[in-house]
Image (cartoon, rainbow, N blue to C red; front, top):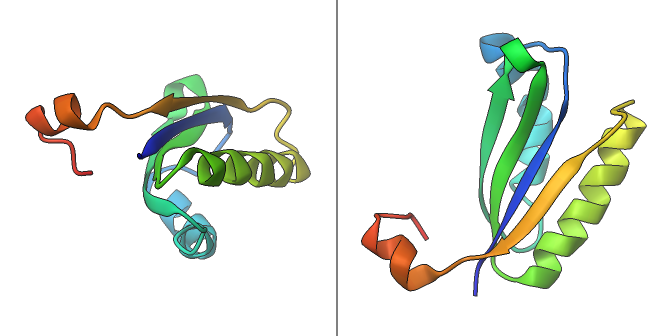
Amino acid sequence: MPYLLQVDFPYQGPWGDAMTAAMRGLAESIANEPGLIWKIWTENPAAEEAGGIYLFQDLPAAQAYLAMHTQRLQGFGVPSVNSKIFQVNQALSQIDRAAL
């Protein structure tokens, strides 16, 4: 059963194309995380926040990634990391065209 992980944190940029260039290596690393199905990168320059929405194959993979990623972000100097993990209701999500 898939699990969704939502993460956001204070971030002062870069944004857009500059963020893409700066974070390409990190994105490639994240793509190889055990149990990751996909990630959507999020950014909100006006609120100075960034983060992501992740879909994992199971709860242990989501929890392990969150623990590792929180430590990594704190190592980058991020003062606080907000996160939530949700179980996915596949039947209802597929009615609404979720790519599961």
